[in-house]
Every structure is written in C-alpha cells, then in structure tokens.
Image (cartoon, rainbow, N blue to C red; front, side, top):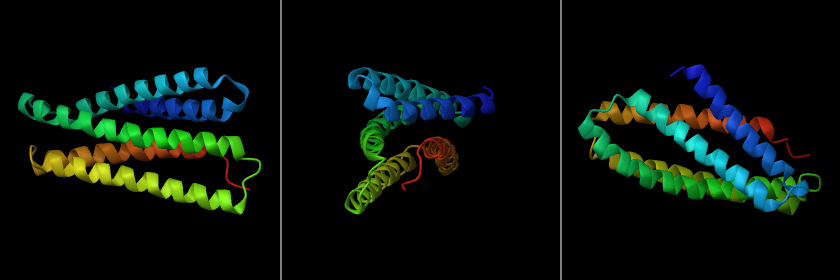
Length: 162
C-alpha cells in the first residue's frame, strides 16, 4: 500500500465531506447526509487497511485487537457525528456568526475534542491489556498520524471565522 496514495485518499475524502457539508444549504439535506455518511464509511475502511498494513499483527494479536477497535470506532463515529453537526451549523451560520454563537461553537468543539480524547485513552488502556507495549505504541503512532492528516484536511476546507 502506497502511503502517499492513502494520505491523498484520506485528505480527499475529508475535504469532499467538508465541502458537502458547506453545500448543504443549497442541496437536499438527505442526499448530503447520505454522501457524507458514505465518505465516512469509506474513510473508516481505508483507516482499517492502514492500521492492518502498519501493525503486523499475529493472528492472536489481530483477534484481540479488532473487536476492541470496533468498539472504539463506534465511540469515534459518535464523536464524528457531533463534528459533522458542528460543521453543518458553522456552514449554515458562517456569514453571520455572533459573539454568542462563536462562544457556543467553541464550547461544542472543546467538548467534542474531550470526548475523542477520552475514547482514545480508554481504547489504549484496553489495548495495553491485550497487546505488547511496543504494539500499543505503534498503534498510537499510526492513529495519531491518521488523525492529524484528517484534522488538517478538515481545517483546510473550513474558512476562518470573520
């Protein structure tokens, strides 16, 4: 698997998803939501491929990892739902964000980030019970790299508040 292709695919997937969220005001919400959900599903599959290719799990390690990862992904999906809702709210209000709305949105973003970090910490703690420390550290590195790329792709598509 070519890392540059994966990075490009992840970046494109998130950029398109964010662009679709911005376009929601002129499109049918259901079709936009369906497109965003499909992009998120595809991205999750790509992420699982990256993890699988990067970790070098034994059969025993894979059997221990993937069920825990599935639970973690469910928690992250819930956080992602909140992020998408916040992006849609921002897109709907981007031309007229008041001081109060800006304060509210920052609070929501911080709460979303807190939930994501809490889920990640819980997952890593679970991994420490079933994988060697070096495998956990490797996973943490891979997860962080993927998340940084995703965050950069999203941030690059969202205009700054004026």
